[in-house]
Image (cartoon, rainbow, N blue to C red):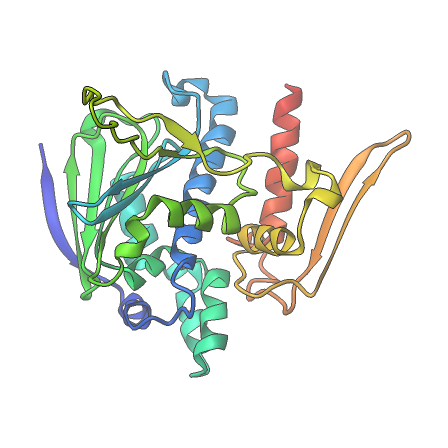
Length: 319
């Protein structure tokens, strides 16, 4: 049975939304990187959980991120088949986010737009960058292992409140649909989206897919409507495993921003491969400034979390 209710955002979230709606980011394209990064994290989490419980993968082990454009509806959708969320997780992660450092983020705001925008990714609030380009955001999700009737739909116009509804969702994972503002039609252009993905998310190890543009029928040809094929927009392989001479400085910097959720470029980095009795590849970054959760045992974002995640992935391959 569907159960829908309206709730108010936490006070700090309301303040954050106002900053987003008034374009705190100097580069609007960043919202897509943040949403793709979230989708990638959800797929990684499912991969880890499925090591102990393979049934969570159901009949869909091919983990990926999909972009979908609907020009008539003026929507851009980012969809993944990752771990998904329960109703309680949606409310806790999106409506409240006290754990993600929102209070600390707001306390560090300086009034300098460029400096303040650089803080957002560090504090785990990148989902709200959606409201830079969208006047309404709809999120539909179902937790892996839950039944179809336990699906959840979250929706907000960034006005201080959100609705949440329990409904049937046939597949696991999360779908985020952005209802774009007037003047943001450029993000419905497939060519532009390809460029953004290749610039900011090429290093994501999961494939990021989007349907190809349909080829118009030539004069005199019969018009046959075929389902467009999907193309993979990114290289979908580990950046550290690629030869150094194939990696640009910008790619190194964007990979750092992905794993650290930092909007500033790193101070320095080192990439080397050591061979001998023990073989390993090193990719070490030094942040420009210390992360806000440096002294926390279990940081929610940043390099420490990513290093642990990589080791888990490597161990899983050996099983």
